Structures are given as structure tokens and as C-alpha cells.
Length: 299
Image 1 (cartoon, one colour):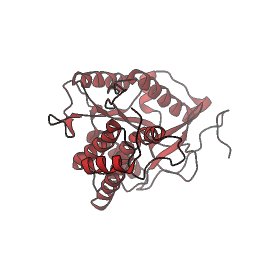
Image 2 (cartoon, rainbow, N blue to C red):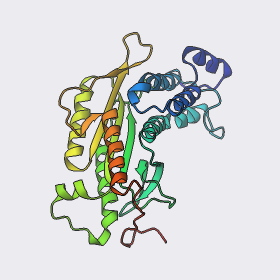
Image 3 (cartoon, one colour):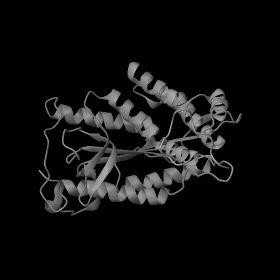
């Protein structure tokens, strides 16, 4: 089924669920004006935003005024819009974390690793230098799962999770190795990865079609925190019984202190930032340039 960008189809879907860009702007405005410090306080608005975007996807209609006008077809415009769905999630959690601390965060910034740069959704502290070279905290935010539509069976919540876990493991190691470069000595892996900066966190939100997927998400997150990550926040949602929107799913049993809800991990990150600032006489730590090595950016 080809996508449509006809005004009649756009008006039909907009009358049904509204407009995703307008809802996104309203959500951002609410977080900023009300100094929202908890995802749960805007959970309903976030789920409504994702339901709205998914409805346009299921109806195969390009939202009015959205997408790259240079795209060769409505299908490409809609695909481009939908690929940016994860940015809605990462932007919302970054903004909420920003309300929880007075210290500036860097959003969607390039950060130097030992072998390459990595685009990180949330990094602290923010610096004028680009790419960043000395963050103490790095956090990735991922949104998975997509609804089916005519000609497409959709995408499960756990699709590519094992590959994404491998990517996060490499990213966490590469970021930590850059800070020490040739001076790195890993006598004990678990001790080194827990103490070497930066601390690395992950936040995952998933559209779940099968509640059993939550157990899989927890299992994968526990593996990640047991080997590479400093904490993983999980959030799951599903279509409600009326088929009229999304509703949250509680985490199943088996979570640990470092695999828990989005709000718990956001609170932990904010507390870590406050502690570091307090330990540095209520100031952001001074910039640190890691030792030079072949992957170093130019001065």
C-alpha cells in the first residue's frame, strides 16, 4: 500500500488522532513550563504522541507539513518521519533530566571514543569543544517496536536487541578506553569498567505486542549491567483493550537495583551529577584532555 500525502487523507487522520508535531511541541512546552522532573508525570502525553505517529504509519498517510519536501515520494517522506520517532523519546527524557539538575547537559552530541566518535543522546558535562572528549556521564535512549500495516508485519519490541546490546558494549568500552588511552591498565575487568569514566547508562522504551517480551528485555538489560553498563531504565507499553491508544505495562519481577524504571535511572543520574558537582566545590569539573593517541581530535 503506497503512502498518501493528499490533503483529504491528511485531514481524515488528523481529525482522528490530531497532529504529531503539534502534540510534540505541546509536550516539550509542558515539561519546560512546569519544570517536570518525572517521566510518569507526562507518560500519558508521551504515549498519546507515539500513538498518533504510529496511526499515521498504520494509515500510511504523511502528516500535514512534515517530512523532507525534497523526498521523491510520499513513502520516502513518511519513512523519514518515522525513523525520527526515537528522537522524540530521547529528547523527552533528556529534557526531563535537564529539569532535575542545574548543570548543562549535551544532547545528541558526538563524543570521542578510543577508535571513533559516538553520537550520544545525553552527555554530561557539556563543553564548548566539539566533539566532546571528557564526559563523565553518557546515556543512550532507544525506542523499539513498530505497529503492522498493510504490506508490513511490523517490528517486535525485542527485534535486534542482541545486536543493540553488542553495540552498547562496544560503545561503553570505547568511550572508557579513550579517557585513559595508552595509560590504561585493566587488572580486573569488572572493577575497571565500574570505575573508569564515563559512567554509561541506557534508557529503553518498547512497544510490546507480547507481554513475555518484557522478561526478555529484563534479561538482556541484566546482562548489560552485569558486564558493561552502569544502569538500564526500562519502559514498556502496549495497545489498550479498546484499540484506541497505548497504555503502560509494569515491569515484571526480576529487576535489580540497576535495571529498573526510567524515573529511577534518571533520578540516579541526576544524583550522580549533583554529587560530582558538590565534590568539586559546587562547580562543574574542569575540562580534562585525555592523553594523545592516534584517534585524538586535533587541538
